[in-house]
Figure 1 (tube, helix red, strand yellow):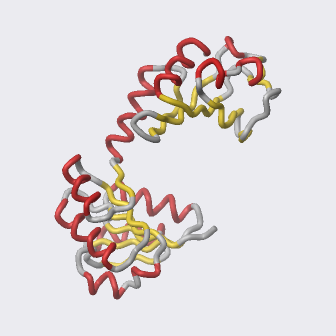
Figure 2: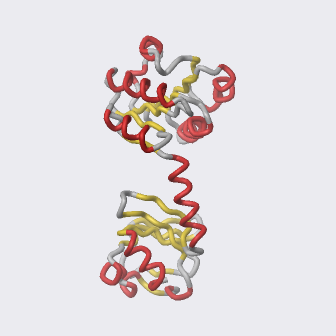
Figure 3: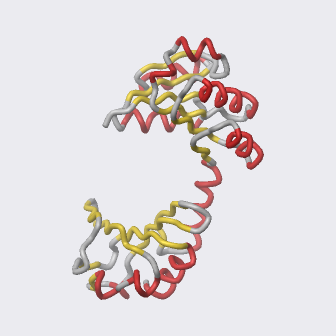
Length: 218
């Protein structure tokens, strides 16, 4: 379903979000005070405007209330990020996602009602670290302090085994959500589906259980 997004702040993070949302076919409004950044993003956004995300009248003039989501991606100016978030919530935006610089920035954002707080550098660092320490882990998404979704490479140890044979839910407390093979992906695989060496297993579970499955099951 097509959605409407506004992105305030067109640094590397904000620009990459604009481009990806636009590629996915959604309506994207790009906002920044820097004319050069606006010119660079124009072909990757439905609309782009030079405006101040901390100016209530400017936000109202671009019709910010019409957007399903607003992403505050303002760079190093924590004060502007906080003020923009506060204004957006006061204007009644249901979903305000904000890039946080640090823990203290996050605490303030939580108190003023940000709906989702993102730490792109921290999240990416975590994913890269997970990949570096294990040849079996392809990607890593932290769901909470305790639970994650991990993409793991199937080794010869599980080649030609079915999900029923492995029974990882009983043995390790994890669940295989999907199996990727080349360009194909099998969502909600059946118990008798075979795993081949080189398949990517999409697994959800407690971090301790995932580690145990990685060490013992693969």
